[in-house]
Length: 241
Ligand code: FPP
Image (cartoon, rainbow, N blue to C red; front, top):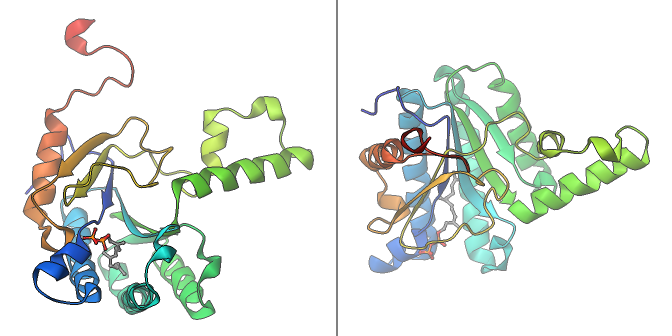
């Protein structure tokens, strides 16, 4: 098990490779997403067990609407089922949050999201953040729009808008930046995930595994890689200063 010391506060995961996992087995893509959802549940539970404070997973992007309708429907069906299981998280002391524009979803889904957030609000273990209908650019644009509205209404002075103020208008207000970003499956890109919050993240690309096969031991591997990195945030390392 990973040691608590040296754990990143916030890990982001791009759950990539569900489609290829299914294709390799001659299965429909939706079976890959189902296996991906199971992998996600196991990793969330493990992250809580080892004492991680924040885990954000990319479930559905603002660009994923370009996929065939039956694939989108299958991901939304998984989301619905998953939301129904979330009661268990209260017992496990996991706090759940959703980021992204949820207003496009059916009312029952929005109500289930609200309920999951409310019921888990006081949990003190892992904060599990699901990015759903999320896009980094859309997030930044909505923050800019709301800042402009507040400035026009006289609630905010334009001169007061700095990085800290801007952050408070993001979906992730109050959540620390991502320390470690993990992407399996051999794609080496951010795909519009947490653009602002990953400015100084360490990136770990794990090309040898597709998301449905991602196991807790692989999270440990990524955490060990993270611990071996020297983070300088634009400054100098201790050895150089
Ligand atoms: C990327 O793999 C994965 C997605 C776009 C969807 C992620 C969704 C899940 C893990 C399941 C839903 C989870 C919950 C918690 C409800 P891909 O389809 O792009 O894979 P490919 O690149 O191999 O085609």
